[in-house]
Image (cartoon, rainbow over the protein chains, first blue to last red):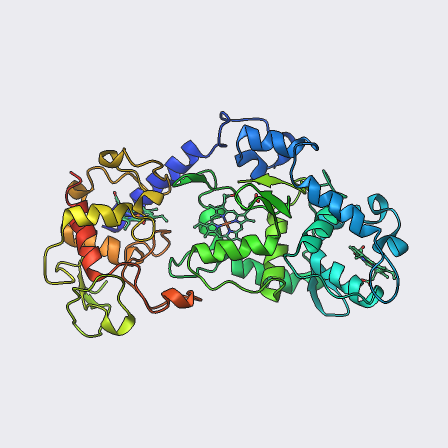
Length: 269
Length: 150
């Protein structure tokens, strides 16, 4: 019986390899920068139409939020009478690389911070303005704008030194089964990337395109919104937006996509 | 490996109710030779009802991962698990029952959820906490349906 089951598992593995190709493209497609070694961006699992929509700046609906973010960048807000640009000048210069290398360890807090948290930290400390709500239009717009300044740059996060313990926690989270369905992130996005789960093709669950514009949502969503959705999908209690658990997970998932280009705003189903 | 193992030692209540069972009402069953030889409800299941549970996305949702030629009118069969065509010829009823009740007892690493288990799970949404994915009756119906896949 034991051997029997192993045979079945092997058969499934073989099947996975056989069908492990993109949505509408043939075997051994050349994905250019969207594939690095065995790692592929969610872009390569999308339909041709979604891909075309993403790369055309005029068609990409996420660009509306980027433009909104550009306006916020120069808008004075808060008691200090400052805007982001007062201190950071031209975002194309000052924000380049942020989307590729965040989350990072914040020495002061002694833990990781991601882009949303850095934005709110600047709003509080440097602008004396109220923090943005996590999934608000303003937060999505400014995060999209900041990350967009790294468009095309390879994802490269620091996971050693002070970041190491947080990276390890994020990794443990990734492999932990949870929810009534008792599944881990890895079982869907590592073991079954490329396979159909009913009508959906499973991607590697990469986060190089966040905030991503989801056709299903008709708006962009943050990384943590996606994490919450994937937790609830297996009937597990999600963690809060900006929770340590999710920021640690964000570092691990970002590292999984090392070398992939920043795509913000990516277009996904 | 012990030949007989009691996995759930709660009340041997016979569940005839619809919906999911909560922990203290779980039907008791014995695993013998990697199979659950006797019905959880003490009765044979209904294959036609089982087909509905099998397809229903909020219940079995078995097509999320499996393919069944007899159900080809249903769109989108997943490719995570093997085809279930001919599964009744590969396994006996008791083996099919264990596969549905707790696939992890057979293969601890499987992605297939345990449809009749409440213990050993983490951070289950409150709405589903302490509840099984299928009721004992639904499990028996699904097993009866699987037995038609020859």
